[in-house]
Amino acid sequence: AAKLSPEKLLCQLRDRVNVTMIQGSDGPFDTSEWQQYLPGKSLNETVGRLDRCAVVSSAGSLKSSRLGQEIDSHDAVLRFNGAPIKGFQEDVGQKTTIRLVNSQLVTVEEQQFLRDALYNTGILIVWDPAPYHAEIHEWYRRPDYNFFESYKLYRSTHPEQPFYILNPKMQWQLWDVLQENSLEYIQPNPPSSGMLGIVIMMTLCDEVHVYEFLPSKRQTDICHYYQKFHDRACTMGAYHPLLFEKNLVKHINQGTDEDIYTHGKVTLPGFRNVRC
Ligand code: NCC
Image (cartoon, rainbow, N blue to C red; front, side, top):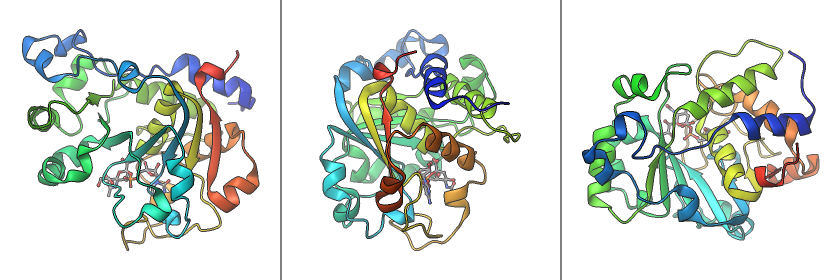
């Protein structure tokens, strides 16, 4: 597979990766029961038009970055899973507009997910690894983690908070673009929350700054900025094709290498501003 130019790659992402949330009219969700749980407004309506957006990875290299103010200066900030703010504002900021969580967290860490006030801020989006290009019906019968009951429980206790389910088709449309633009064969596992979040923000915003997805000079084997746990796989990938994701993001970065080195910062255009 030959590598496309950055411009062509952006067009592929824009035109082939369909970022949508599950709606009440979609397949198995078109029941009267599900209508009570799924948000009435679309994600686009809920967030409105966004100009500058930040995506904050959970990498250990955010520690001592002092990027908090810069991150908070954005119109919207996306964070992942259980990444905390309290006690880390100086490095990661405090604004949370969207929190993207995986279905494992919602299911396996259910008690914490239902109780921890961390999740009560902003818009929640949950995603689940689906079989390769599976129909929504097939995925619904056999999700990777059966998070649906937990989702309903959360919606019942926080009816005012927007909480979306990411349409699982997106992960494999994105994976296909990753595979076609890599020289090696990629294990058929879905992209990380990080990569999914980047593409979600590219559909909502005019410009996206991503922090510590491509590691800065602070690169470390410490997995998360909020834990003492060491594992190189967190940055390089094990289950998720993280290394390939990072190569692709490096390829379409419109910022400087200096920005990556000093701030771990990547600049990407929103799809509205991509001309094909
Ligand atoms: O660790 P995780 O990811 O929550 O991190 C969110 C995203 O940040 C980017 N990242 C993280 C650490 C690091 N050193 N470098 C990075 O670039 C990645 O893009 C990552 O996606 C996930 O993707 O959902 C993941 O979730 C965790 C875990 O399930 C949640 O934190 C909830 O507890 C997974 N860890 C385990 O299952 C043990 C992780 O593999 C992927």
